[in-house]
Length: 123
Image (cartoon, rainbow, N blue to C red):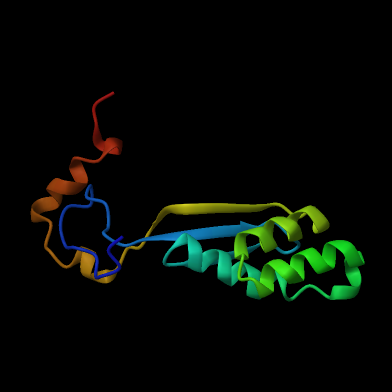
């Protein structure tokens, strides 16, 4: 994965920077973003799993989750947390494209690129 600057070019090109992300479907929902799936699991473990009060989880399950955290098995800790809380977490290893202002620095001569987008296709 290239985490450098997005290239300048036609809008139909995909940005070079793609991030992993997760949606925790709690109340309220929360979105977490990281530069790769391993980092995302670590963030979820720290910001979501470890933030859960221990007293709200049965002793056996709490110890399994704690063990996974201490052994840096972030994904296992997140799965354990999902099982305990019944809160869905949608995890996407890639697919969140990063668009930056640099992406739009090249002038679009007379809107040619815009006119090539699907909205402008003939019916």
